[in-house]
Length: 475
Ligand code: GLU
Image (cartoon, rainbow, N blue to C red; front, side):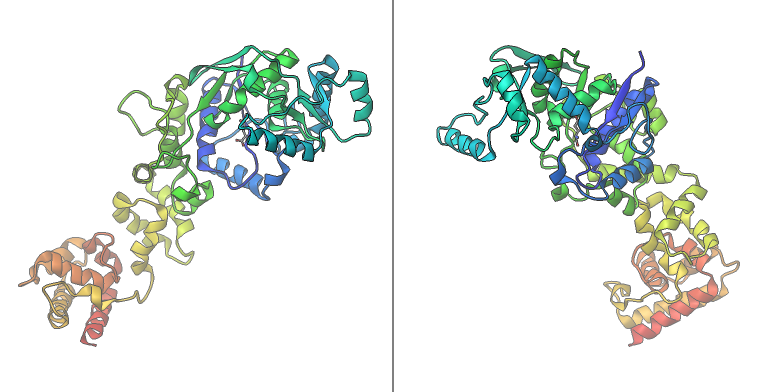
């Protein structure tokens, strides 16, 4: 049997990196079994909708290289794939349960429910619906439902055990009597998440439900709904939530969480995928660099861990460096283009990339490091230029020695630049000397290797900059 998996994001904000990890696992599971992936938009909570959220889901997943087969914009055998466009389906199903005697109309007002809650809280009881409308005779309830505002509630049995054998967590059990007569259909005709998710997973033929572990608490409610319909429960896997360094669920408090932010900061999709796959999953070997295709081959649901899914920014940076170095040079140049001004010369960019790729952590940080090559007059901060043991005066002299050595260097390439400069350090340490030259030429204390940079800059421009630095130092 071919597997069918779904991602079911709610469009409540920018695509969150933690949701992406769950989506990625669904993707890997489905793709390695030649199955089908469905994107379903769960937008029944109308108060939390955020405009643009669906675009952000599409943009983020496409950028990461995660594809799917059926969805709101792709179409498929179960259109529409947006829950708010499927209301009649849920209403029909709720009515079916009422007709079977498995659910009932509830006419309690918001005020009554709030009052009930208040009383229960005051008595330190579990707050739950008191089944006030459960025993209204069916015919009377049906009649009232024609004119009175109502919800549909599930008739939850008083006893019994509910259980799943979760593919990640193993067996989990609940007692039915801990669940209230939950609302299935709200008074505005919208389903609750619980009804919608169960109905859709069923009618869309979903064979495996894989989602974040925050949904475990909802599972007993879902099991009762499956039972009420007489449907079989598909296997479920609840993957551990991605946690921030403090052990709390990863959120904005911990820094960036939107996929778009990582893109803007110059992370490669390859690095994010690699990094995310390893949060809460391990191949069981030392190997750690995986492309999407590798992951489709080696990822196993059995190896998803129950906990310890920690976000680690340094590790992400590490993977980004790894993937930057894995990109063919042309491709790296192409991707860098989005992070540098359009007028920057392509040839020069091509030449400087090999100099910086070894130490590059993000695409975005490259720009400042190499800007000195593309701008006529980079800033010169004299305060950075003078080494500790030196003065402005001695730095001017050192720069004079550098200038005259560079004037004579033949050919003007990194090797001769290096030996020219080393030859005139005199009383200075080579480190101090090259530091002073670097700041004079690039305006910065760190950057690509100096001698190669000077070669790229050319004699003329290098000498001009040294002269400019000297006049700045003279004040
Ligand atoms: N709509 C839920 C979310 O936004 C997903 C629930 C599920 O996968 O069952 O995370």
